[in-house]
Image (cartoon, rainbow, N blue to C red; front, side):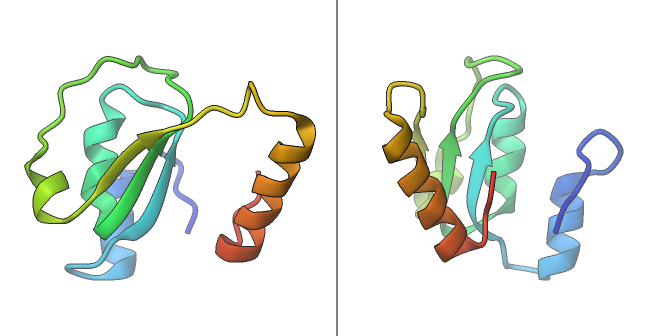
Amino acid sequence: LVVNHSTHDFVLAIKERLGKGRGVDVVLDIIGGEYINRNLKVLGNGGRHVSIAFQRGSTVTVDLLPVLTRSLQLTGSTMRPRCVGDIFRICRLLFRICRVFP
């Protein structure tokens, strides 16, 4: 599922697509800011939110109750300090496991 966040509500689109009570396993967030709370809404139980950039800011207020009650994981990573070989291995793994490709 691909959703243009500029023209559509991606939270609503994902919930409609997956059905009530379901969510995505992983969010790779390059936006940050106010999108973090919206991203948490689309995660399924045990889902992971990975911040990899902050186009709209790195400071945000987050309600941690859903993180606790739905066993969500919040983490961050950057590829910059890694060598090209590490980046290639990570991308290959993401594609093989999740069918995600940059």
